[in-house]
Figure (cartoon, rainbow over the protein chains, first blue to last red):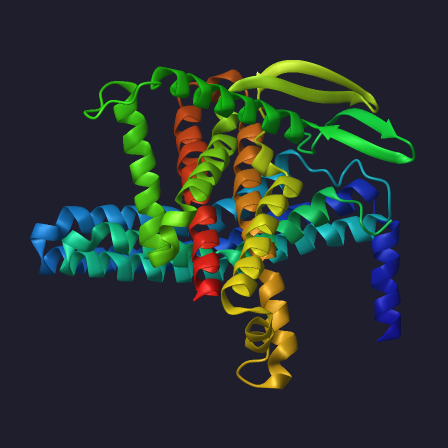
Length: 179
Length: 243
């Protein structure tokens, strides 16, 4: 076991610095996009609920659709944050030109990518809120503004952990913490 | 790419260093614009009429909307806070939207030698110092109004509820509010700023038309939404602390 560990460490230390950091960034960019699972499920749920609301009460269909679109746009946020991190990794990588151990820099990149997966949670949760919001508006179109207000407030709170993940990812990328 | 906050000038007062940053300058510009508009409106409606017309109509509509917004969110306390949170909303809204306007843009090609260009402004709310200061206003108001309404002893007792061993959790919960509030605004606006900055580095053929859609989502939709959410959450916190 020790021998294997030493072999891996030797391999990492002897590999070219650039190659190591770039491969770490590439893995991270891919990992970050895993966050897209959340908004996908959430927006799908919202769309389904809105379709149901329109089917049940075509009179309030327009209002329910507006609520669905608004809520789904908010549910998209964590996917966009993941995209921001992945694009930074690919096109404006701050790790490449930095002083320090290559292994640690590559690991920082992978860590930043991994952190963004937290976006699954807010994505599903916000989508659920959007779906329930459009369902409620379908039943009572007159209460649209109150329902939208409560939905947006709750979605903002549900976003909190996703924001924390983004902050940690940005710190790992842009702030020189380990040296 | 450089998304950091640039320092325009370092002012030394004794041993103390005061850094004048880009966010501070942009924030002063926004304050100046708001004060200027307020003065112009004040001059325009020097003689208010019973039946409003022209600019008085617009201003009355805005004030009424903001007052109603405060009242529906805060319930019976709303009237008192309408003017404060209305101003806060307008300020945060202009900060979030300032990325769409031209203004001083500071870059430091060599460390310590700032260069001022005229370019699109960096939104002050994409600086954690600004959003944290705004969230601390809310935190102080929450604790201050809770003490004022309930009295210091009821307020302290409220922290030990429902059982005294939960006191540390309650304290952490209170302290977490301004942190999540400030990071929410900061993270959303910074995310938009970064993605716009990266997009404008693309070759020219990608810059026809598409930035309009990106600005509509990242600056206008996210900016307006986050300004509303920040103010609405602040109002909810203060109102629930007073009950």
